[in-house]
Each structure stands twice: as C-alpha cells, then as structure tokens.
Amino acid sequence: MSTEHLELDAEYGALAFDCYVVDHWKDDSPEESQQQWERLVWEYQRLSLKERNKYHHRTQSIPMEITPTHVQILRTHQTIYERNLGIPNCTGIQTVWLRTCYDADVAEKYADMKADAYVIGDKVLDDPARYAFAEDWRMVLGRMPGITDFWGLSDQNGDGAMLKYRSGLDDGAIRAQYERIEDADAQTLALKALEFQALLYLVDREAIETGLIKLLWLDEHGCSAWENRVAPASMYQLAGALLGATGLGELTQGNATRGCLIEL
Image 1 (cartoon, rainbow, N blue to C red):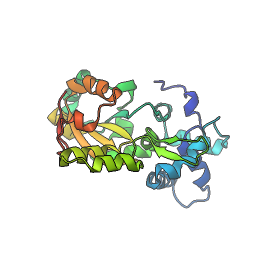
Image 2: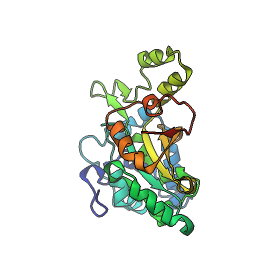
Image 3: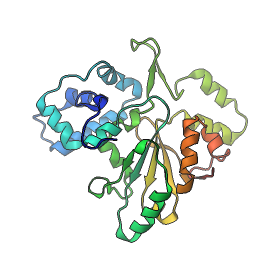
C-alpha cells in the first residue's frame, strides 16, 4: 500500500469522515486544531453506522470538492498511508496491525514476533512517532476514524431507504435464531460476532512480553466488543479462516472466555 500517493478512493473528500469534517469544522473555534479534530473524531465514533451513512453517500460517485483549508486540515492529522489504509472494504472483516509499545528492552522480541506473523493486505501501523500509545490503543481512532466503517452497511435499494448491517446486527431473524442456541457459550459468541466491524491486531507491551498478539474485535463505535489472543505463527491460518468467513465460535472452538487463545 502506497505511502506516497493517495489511492483514488482516498483522495481528499473521498472518505466519509472528510465530509464530517467539512460539515462541522469551525475556523473560529477557540480550540486548538488537534483538540477540535479529536472532538470531531469522538463525535463521529458515537454515531451509528446508519447515522454516518449520509456522509458515505456523499462520497459514492466522485470525491466532493473541498476547500484548500479543509485539505490542509486532513493532511495535518492523517498520513497518506493512513488514508489509503482507511478505504472501506465490504469484502469481509478487515484487519489492522497496531504496535503501541516501542520500549528498547522488548524491541528484539517484537522483531521476532513480527517475523513470524502474517498480516492481510499489509495493513500495518508501526511508527513510534505516531503510535506510541502505550495502553491507550483507542487513540489510533484519532488518526483513522474510518477503521470502524470497514465492514459497514449494505444499501438494499440503492437509495439509502433500506440500510442493513453487513454483520447482521440489525437482522431480527438472525438474532432470534442465535438467541435460540441452547449452548450458552455458543450463543454468546454468535451474538457478539454481530457487533464486529474490524479486527485490530494489537501489539502492546503485554502482547510482546507474552508472545501473543491481542485480537480486538471492534464495534462500530471503536470499542472492543470481544478479545482473543493468537500466536504469531498462527496468523497465516487465521487469515485464511477469516477470508473463508469462519465464525468466532469455530475460531475459538466454542470457548466464550474473553481473551482466550485461538489455536489453529
């Protein structure tokens, strides 16, 4: 993925959050630029995907025209790579590798983990100047608000009148079917999976020290709806399972303990 040139779908004005910024940015705000940006990010995250759809709808044909001022705002707070990586993709659950610990004493161990791992689509956030968040991994949303738009909605009629979550979150028939599952763990996992919008491979200090990557299944609001762990050497098999739409219950072999190890 390019770090120097914007993809067509990532041009300024082509992402939904760009539209949100254009609509809500106030040049006369008493806030500093970073403060105003972060406030808009968290406001956007509080919206449901259906509430965000009007911003996505405005980007569907061609990038909207935005002023040089708005372009400068976007350039200031996002890199080209982050914008390219943030292009929504409705082909399945999307993954992002995020390293938040850059302590020298675990650098060698991290390098070994990374060498053993496999990341779909080369979506890697690994830069101490930008992602040294320590335990506050949600700060990544301040740079990539669109992570939570990855899976998104399906426009059933093409006019925005009938929007459905691709995850099935708002499908009453599916939810009713899952609620009838007798096994409590299987039911929990099936219902939880309806919330997922993206999968974050989190590599913080704890992950490096234990040698296990944290899998954070993010919901539409950028919160961790569920967590698992996986060994770096198992990530290739995990990638294949995700591409094959393997469910959470199968991935965890029915283990509904939050944070349990996925063994493939």
